Amino acid sequence: MDRVLLEVCCGSADDVIEAYRAGADRAELNCDLFHGGLTPTLGSLIAAKRAADIPVMAMVRPREGGFCYTGTEFAAAVEDAKLLLAHGADGLVFGFLRTDGTLDVERTRVLADLAREAGKTAVFHRAVDVVPDWRETLDALIELGVDRVLTSGQEPNVPQGAQTIREMAEYAAGRIEILPGGGVNARNLDWVIRHTGCRQVHMTGHRQMADPSAANGRGIHFGSCLYPPEDQYRVVDGDYISGVAGRLKQEEKE
Image 1 (cartoon, rainbow, N blue to C red):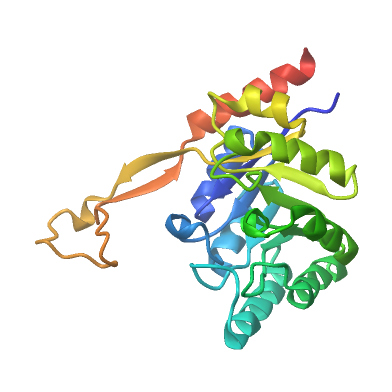
Image 2 (spheres, helix red, strand yellow):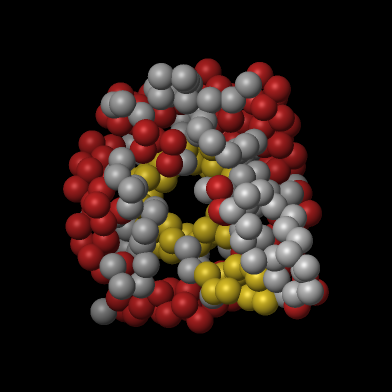
């Protein structure tokens, strides 16, 4: 049986490089993971590809809050997609819905075609988890040539959506890849693999880092009203990812 592939959700070039060094098979590069991941900078993609010899999937998401974008936002997404592909992205991760939550077929076609024409992978992200009919959506994505779907099984996390993910994989029957993601961790990894039947997983694994340059903040905050600590940030925990990757590789040998 094929080894289970590990994709790590990354929020920076350093994250991708750390995931690579830790043994991840693939990375998804974003910025702003706090809002679920937005389009990364070209600089972060270029720096990541220069140092990490694994496929890097680049998020194309112009803003937080839903998946139905204005004409200008979509135009920006298309231009971002072209630039990301031109600068080394191994695939595009995207999701476009209409106001009623159904798949926006035409916008999805544009991004899927861009990826296919570049010989890269097209991934529909967890927007699939809010569509009213996932079977209808999978059929449409298959018809559009999308290669993979990232999903938590239309539940808040993969453990809760595991049965639906298994049903998705059975329904897809190899026509499109199903990638479980959302709430997968070292503790539930084996359970997730067993109950979804999928041979790849998407997960995060971060640790807190300190940046003392902003420690003397005088109560100043540079973000919005949630006011996270300005002298801390999160990075991929290489030891954590290495432990997971090592387990998956050991299982392949056994």
